[in-house]
Length: 137
Image (cartoon, rainbow, N blue to C red):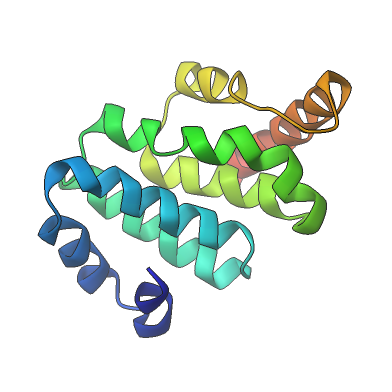
C-alpha cells in the first residue's frame, strides 16, 4: 500500500489489486483509502483514479468496493479530528469508486465516535457538506 503512494503509478496499482485473491482485494482498497485520508490532495486524487479504474474494470465487485469503505466510515469522525480534510477526501474517494447516493447514506449510518452521538451528527453534517462540494466540482 505504501508502495502505491511511492511509485505513483495507477496501472501498477490496478495490477497489484488484481494480483490478490478476490477476497483480499477489498482489504487493500480499505488500506489505500485509510492512508489517503491523512495524506495530501495529490495522494487522494491518485487513490481516487485507482478506485475509478478498479471499478471500471470490475477488479473488485461494486458491493465489495463499497463495503471496503465501511471501516473508514466507522472511524471517519475521529480521523477528521487529526486530519480535517478527511471528509472531503472520503467524498472524493467515494466518487472515484462510483458509489450511489443510497450507498453514501448507508455508509454515513456506519459513523461512530468515541465522543458520542452528538459528535457523530456533527461528522455527518460535515461529510454532507464535503459530499455536496465534491459532487458539484
